[in-house]
Image 1 (cartoon, rainbow, N blue to C red):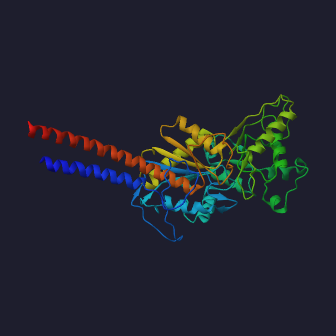
Image 2 (cartoon, rainbow, N blue to C red):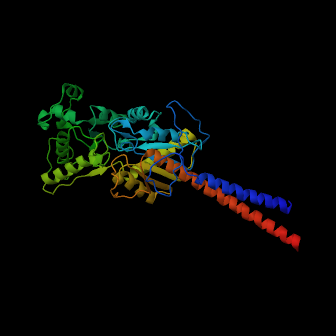
Length: 426
């Protein structure tokens, strides 16, 4: 190749690299969160017109994924946060890169089957959500169905939590309603409604041993449920009619999450399962004069095993839906609660081989102007900003790699040009 041809190729390569860099660095023409970290791109990657608009993604993002909390991030008070609908469309291909980004949902909420929760979320976000990409607070409990025989399931509406537990494979599921039906004096201030009485099952609890207690969802009757939980905790090996002398013979208690508060429709946060757990533990300690011993465990965020469970689910989802076998290099987790979402993401990042990148939004529990107890990698206004930030960060990383290769090629070409020029002048 002549020297002039090599020089032309050299300058073309440099020019193309500069053009690529200018394009990715161009400022956005669409407004976004004014307080997004200054090193985050504000480029618009959503072009949303109607719910029925569609765009076929040209490729699947294989190096990164998103995982989302739900309440306070995507939904508040049973309604979608406006930016959430746009964010989902962006992930499903309606972005300037034409990429589809795999994503899952990881919530501490529960009380329904994953299928029912998916139907609810699909209706709220105007897109199809499948059980294979959804984790409730109690989803990991299904792995314990073979461990225990008779279990007490607490929380939720009506018989839904019993149905969830039986769907997981638990063999013998008892509810507080069954216990109250057996002995109405168990809860002096709670009387079963005709529907509750009809749905509750007849059992002779003199012959029943409760092997474990699972709090699947938020209690609808704290006083009654805590009373029954205390009776079992102070029993001899889970037999309701008995009382332990040492108060250390009760069965284990499992809570689907440990959030003290959560973001609901009210302007201020509301009490959650973590508060019920705390009241249960403090009351037990008072009743046993500090001599008793409880065996309690929590699932959900911020527990690292819950995030590891999510990682396994994501691997299955990427493989079954997109044919991707290898693990993503980066998981962007978007949450609204520093004490659970951010804490858990940062904790699993210390153990995982890939990068778990925490993003905090201002649409839920976190209050702007306060200092989060657990620091996210970035704080943004809403979930659409979070998605924009993650995708643009990945595009910059991809461009950086491309530019590195281009510059290596430029250097090689320059060396050849120099060598040939020296040969001509020699």
